[in-house]
Image (cartoon, rainbow, N blue to C red; front, side, top):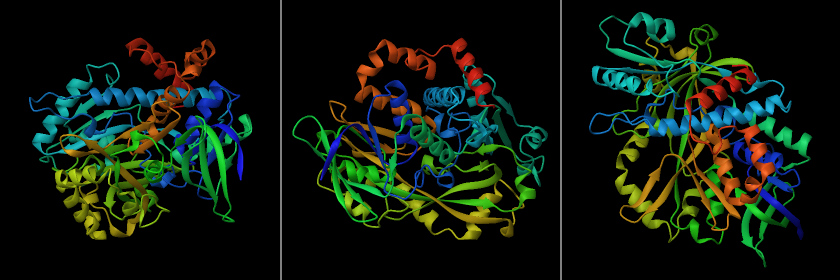
Length: 490
């Protein structure tokens, strides 16, 4: 059975599909869009509240975005790029609030200061150099730095209990940081699609294949997981935003751009505090440095969260390994993803990333007490009875073909698109949701360039995302920052 054509089918009911669909409908309300989700609700995988860190990744505290080069210089180019993208997200969310589409922004975004914190003389020197470099750029010119124990007691008193004057530590702080509930935001976006644009989500519908039609369109093969019925739906454009499940579906799409991509699954766990007296002693997101040889995903942090209006505290992440590509996936996912096109990429990454393998083995074999010891680096007197383990989401790190090395492991997000832009697929993880607006605007550029080229499209974009497509300038950046702050009640 075939059904009539859609302009766009979004595969996956997460933050990316929701963002793409809302942006597209605002820019072009006549577009016919369908969203397909394999589970019985939206935002149940990577977008789910507890399945991600909830940090508004704006490069204010994440040290892996500001590496030290061999000559000792601090490279903040990636931090500038990510900060700019997160501010675009805030501008769009602020627009939705201004239009009355979202009534209560504190249901998904709240003010929580962002800190970096390190110990040891070398790391402290690095952090000070980072501070000196970042404060010269207008995006980060409110950054503060200290090596003083008393000042750190004011910033995060819970972490400074039991510390001695002789301990060498340093910290930086940017006050404007945010805490995000991406699960709540995703549900807001789908509610907007339903109530404002009559665009529904079909849950319990799993996309099992995407094939070219007779003309330039695509046929999406869909299985109803409730009754087993299979249908075929035609679409001019298809976006695959199914989190870890995207790779398996992309491999079935007949476009040459997919060749050479692979995936490496990593699961995660948090230590979550269950003692409200302790939770209330910490109001901050505090990120530190990954261990020597550890991957960027391992950066430890102690985070204030807001979950459904209630304050929470978590520490992690701790990595795990299984062969699923989704939390609700199959243990055969990894093996299904291996083919003749990506074996060289997978093999190249394996041999060049042995430290990652060692790191995962070490993480998987950690006991609960080992995890508590890691927490005690941050909270010296942390007690077993005050914390419990929560299993977080499943991530698939992208493996990309490389002519020299066979393959490289990508620690970011990657858009794979057909030459004509009719098929787009998002692979990868962090910073992901934080930069969802900028990433989905890139998808629209590929899929619907005519919308963005129109005068109406340009006018709408200027209202929704004032900084999109414009050079970064201090005055405009700060004006947009203040505007978003007021609208989002930060």
